[in-house]
Length: 308
Image 1 (cartoon, rainbow, N blue to C red):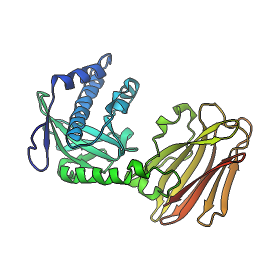
Image 2: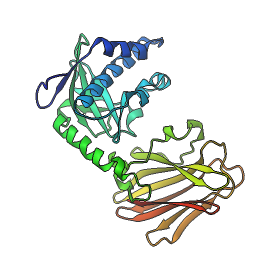
Image 3: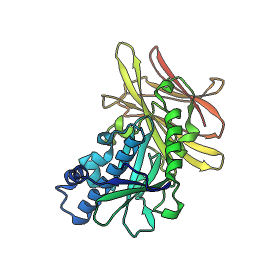
Image 4: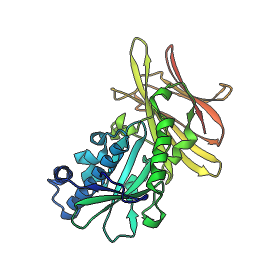
């Protein structure tokens, strides 16, 4: 960990600490192959975590799915939360492998994929490079260098710095499909229970993010605004907006969700009825187009501005 092997790789010793964490994460899994998968995934995340800390980035491994006992049993996941940036997927690469394998369940909600080669004795991990490509297999020869990786993370950190978290600023939603997500927009598993979600459309290339909105008033209403963007055709995207209750099972009657154009003229709107679990609007927009999402209840109103 204290020396760069060359311009393209970085070695991280897999210490007793690394193997202890891997043992803790994989214990209790009866299936041998699954247990080995979790063990190797954990070592890969450990290596990237140590590398990024050396490079001055703040990480939060404990907040990642790869440290969630249920998530690692259900999915092939090796993510690492990097503060002010997002989730990196840290994929283990076996000694003689020529490709980095990326499972489909982690093709969304990642800012990048890091290839980590493990030596046969599991005593050292080598950070090989990264890719933005979400594919079943990525050739190791096609990985981008670690110098590009650090530059990429630094650029994301600037884009998503805390100083820019003003909720009223213009959200560059068109960048979401490239993994560049504006500050203040969380993954929906941090906002809602999986049982609440009713996302209407699915697409191979999509990104979903959410934001809690406090509408205040006597009833102290809080809702989660969920926005999903998917590529539809060249120069056009499909956008799904939904409102869910936070802390309640249903929305109060009278919560309004509307879409306005750049001149603030309302184009679409929907209002919650009694016992609605969520409300939603779906529409298409062209690259460069600006629009507003307006959430209202009683005398309270919150506006979020977007550009595709």
